[in-house]
Length: 190
Image (cartoon, rainbow, N blue to C red; front, side, top):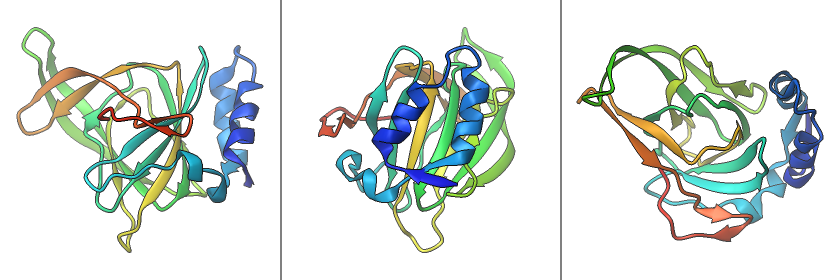
């Protein structure tokens, strides 16, 4: 795998054809990683949660640098039926996929069961399984280190569903960026 500076990496994605974009991105993230030293201007960490930092956006896709402090994790969530790829810049993430066993939108009820777990490393970028798109992501560094991952979302979306495993409920939430093109924002991320 060849590492590229993040800006060149995003330009390469932007040059992929719109027709066949999904399969082209699958190959692209297997061939090209993101150089760790190129993401500093986009890297904003918080000790209490992961951060979502916008690097690139057009009508077809957006690229975010997600920064995971020690012990941070995402809520259980989905991506509104959009494609997602995750590429590690540093550290390690673990993804837990969930299957919706029961779902009643009129009551906001959803009973989930864990279906699979896997790790994302620099050598193993992954895409979200569209057959089971509900998942949670955890910083799984064995030494308590921070992690950084680049996420490609096609098409961009600004809301998602958040699931409460214990209460068996779900709800829509609005997504926010912690930084936009390297400029910190005061918004709270999900």
